[in-house]
Image (tube, rainbow, N blue to C red; front, side):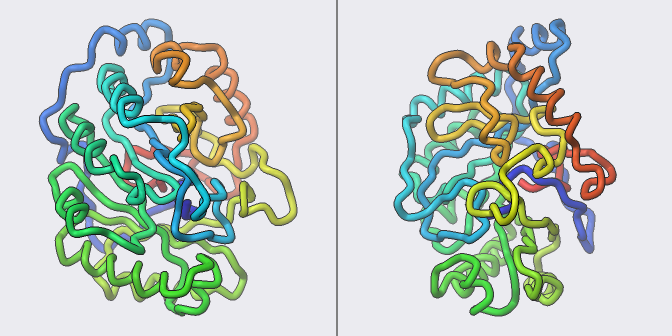
Length: 312
C-alpha cells in the first residue's frame, strides 16, 4: 500500500475550503443501542474505519508499510464478512470508511462493498494508487458520498518509478488524477518524502496545476518495507491511533490503525466490533500509543482520520 494509508496525519495545504464529507453525507441510518452502550462504558466512539480488503498490489513501493505487491492475496475476509463489518459499523455510529490495500481496485468485490457502505449511510473513501481504474469503477467513484485519495512522490517519472518499482506508474497515476479532477470527484493527494533528493515541492506545484486542491505531506514510516534503521515502534505513529478509528486487515485482525499492525486488539472472524471496542485490549493499546506520541512531528497531536486533514 502507498505510504499515506498508514494512518499518519498531516496539515492540509489547500487553496480553497474543502467540502466537509460529513456535511455531504447521504441519508444515514440511526445507530442502534450499541452506540449508547459504548458511551455508557466510557469507550471512545469510533467514527472511522480503515478496511484493508487486500494485500495485492501492482506496485512494490520501497516504503510500503504493508509490504503489498503482486504476490499479495485478498486474505480470509469474504465479501459477506466485510458486509457484516459494515453493518456493525453503521450500528456503532461509524460515519466513514476507507477501503485500502494493497490496491483496493484489484479486489473483485470493491464496487459491491462501496455500494453496500453507501446503503448503510456511510461515507466512503477509496485509497488507490490510481495506476488503473476501469470504466465501471469510475462510475462507482462518481457517486455522491464517495471520494478518492492517492499517493504522489515527485514530478520526475524516473524518480517516481524508482519508488514504486514499476515502469509507467507515474504516467498512469498522473493521468487518472487528471481524470478524477475532470469528473469532479473529491480527491486528496499525499506527498510522501521517501528520499532526501526527492522533488517533493515540484510535485506539489504539479498537482496544483492539475487542479488538485487537497495536498498533504508526510514522512517515511519505518514499518514494513519502510524500515531503514529501526524496527517498528510507537514513535512511527501519530499518537492517536485507536481513538475514534480502527483498522481491519485482510485476515480479520483489528489494529488501532493500518501502520500499527503489530498491535492486535481482536479479530472480526471471532467476535463482533462492539466486543472488540469494549475490550481491555483496545484501552491498553490506546494508552500505550499515546504514551509514546511523536510530539516533534505532530505538534497539534490531533489525528482524526474522519476529517479532511488526515491521511488516510
